Amino acid sequence: MNRERNPLLSAYALLVYAFLFAPIVVLMIFSFNDSRRTFVWKGFTTEWYGKLLANDDLLAAVGVTVQVAVVAVLASTILGSLLGLGLARLRFRGRGSTETLVLIPMVTPEIVMGLSLLLFFVALFDTRGSFAQLSIAHITFCVSFVTITVRSRAAGMSPQLEEAARDLGASAWGAFRYVTLPLITPGIVPRGAPSDT
Image 1 (cartoon, rainbow, N blue to C red):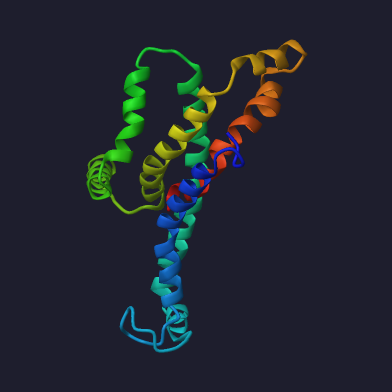
Image 2: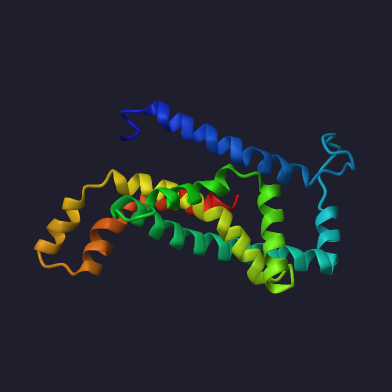
């Protein structure tokens, strides 16, 4: 399906992204508001950003947040793509259970998942709040979204395309790199970036 033939699908996707990102844009605009009240615009100011840059603890927290987000997006994109391909292509015992496990983070409320992971890390490592633990928690949540999208994309792809590449002399890696990866990339890119939103 391309956009010319299905404008409704494009409009729907645009609405979904607007729903996700409009609150963030509004928040960014009002961060320059000169009023202490949230939705009463009194004028433009950068005073709050000056106070932000003077607060070392807050800057450290923002730095950790950005680092965790980058690690989570990269790791969940790689792991989710591999898992999605495996679920679409391979038939193995426990496949249904694996698909159910992939869906659990998507349907579990974030507060429940966060508390569960906190209790897990405290019980296992007797510590909490390390960078590795924060990253693992975010990856656990984000990988599901990438997996579902890539699995759907890979399931609609004919395995004969890869077989044809192999028949023409491509290695397994070459067939994946030049045939499979370009075909599943439209499923990876749109989910990888917003997976940590």
